[in-house]
Image 1 (cartoon, one colour):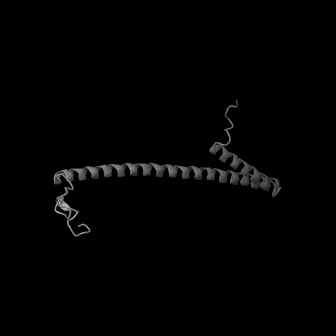
Image 2 (cartoon, one colour):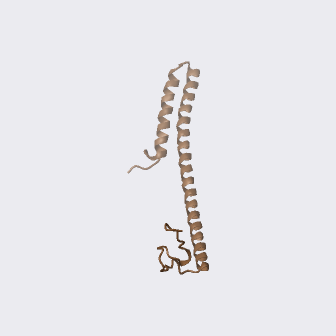
Image 3 (cartoon, one colour):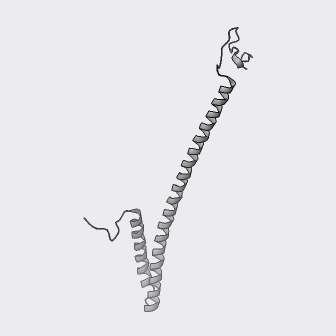
Length: 129
């Protein structure tokens, strides 16, 4: 229905006058075919978007895994340095100096590992030009 109360379906006028305006020259079968075509196009489009979102999700997860790996390398370097310092302190009787020194060395090793993993520093075996 239009504003003036006239039905404009099936070629009736939307202007309210006696003239007829044809809204569509397509048969119902042709309209059904177009509707099916549109439906298949939309399904294909949504399928492609879902595939792209899956790939993006995997990329996001791999970035998180990389960050966790780097964090674990850093923490493990500090812990190993602290444990070596603690064992040396117990063995040599130099409590707290070995622990302090090796904690700092572990921290430095952890920072170096993180910088190597991110590409800020080259690997020790890389050739110099």
